[in-house]
Length: 247
Image (cartoon, rainbow, N blue to C red; front, side):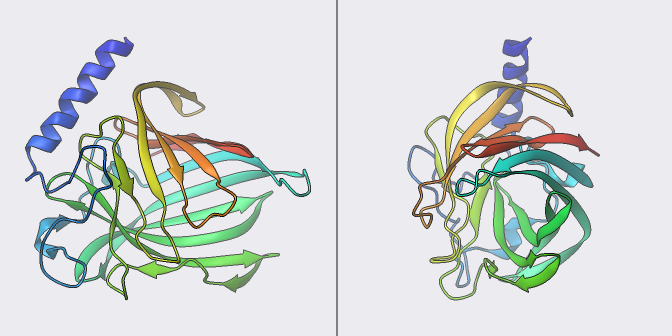
């Protein structure tokens, strides 16, 4: 079954790539935004808020719920984590591009610690781009600050790639391109992973290694994306997060 599923995903991803115009750099180097007009180097006409990339199909969902736990390396205390990812029925203009708005809320031991509005759009070649986020950080249930917020098109900020149409092992993508604020990078490690989480069992999943060059501690995360669902599992040194339900 694993090999049959992999053949299906490979065929669908290849079809998605063939329907585009191959603006991605691809290969083993970090990709860049497609050429176009404006300060971000992109053409708004090339983007859509219909996001149906097989490995990041936001338009197919309204709510995804994740749960897990994380241990504080300094205190040794473990907290339960819950993340609710809601695809809102609204759009926004960022850098002249109409983007889909996704609300992401994180709770620790039942108390909200972060709420963000994330902005995504899909390029004509099938790549899903991340155009930034508005962040609300909380402490003891009270709004603390907006640290981590950024928008493509402001200063040197550029949209990053969160998922290409047909990833290959060894590909590197810069997901966040806000110098000094958010610079996350993703490396594709595997296309054949099997994942079992409360929301279901999945095969032929893509495994990535995510790093933040701004993190002096060298924190590394491993994420898994599965056909028709998207992000389903994450593991890191201090804990992990898994998909509980989706609709």
